[in-house]
Amino acid sequence: ETGVTQTPRHLVMGMTNKKSLKCEQHLGHNAMYWYKQSAKKPLELMFVYNFKEQTENNSVPSRFSPECPNSSHLFLHLHTLQPEDSALYLCASSHTGWFENTEAFFGQGTRLTVV
Amino acid sequence: SQQGEEDPQALSIQEGENATMNCSYKTSINNLQWYRQNSGRGLVHLILIRSNEREKHSGRLRVTLDTSKKSSSLLITASRAADTASYFCATDGEAGTALIFGKGTTLSVSS
Image (cartoon, rainbow over all chains, first blue to last red; front, side, top):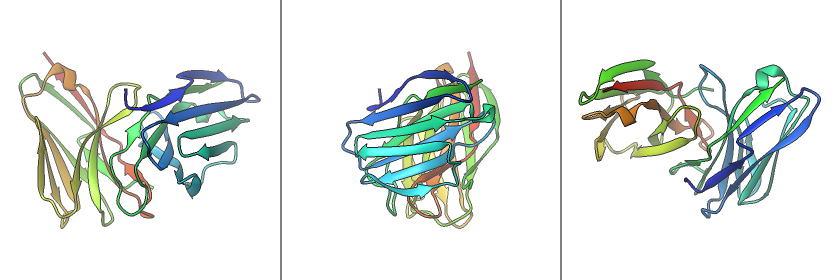
């Protein structure tokens, strides 16, 4: 248990569906991240939030839409996904995302399958 | 963009042997971190080494950092079957706001 909780753990969705991934941390961290992990590829940074403000969008397609209502919660809204979007989506948090990174705490991930 | 790159991609050893993994990176860093991931799960932080440090120990883990060569190594001594996992190095991204990971080394320890 890392203190970062992701739900759901598994998700199967059709290409026309709309779904959301949720991430929650109660570690008092002020930075939260979404990463995508596909088979045989490095972890890809998708979005970064610092103090609820999006500070990085790593050229992610608009069918992925993040939301950070407060420092403890992070969502990833999904719509009209493609089969190649099937992957493990990992949420992480840390004390700060500026200049010097401290240890990141990861959730267990959501295994997404797009059919 | 990828910052760290681990070598080898896969490593198989027997219990009790030492495992060494290497990481190379491209830009200047504030610190370098190593993480472990069991199959299909989240990543777990192992150790952080700052750019002004050359070596750090944590239990059976030993990490070295050579900023002149932009490389780091992770040594796991007296490996156990439970050490079987993927190991990733991570560094600051170019914008300095998030960790950028390499592809990882998959370690398999057989008993």
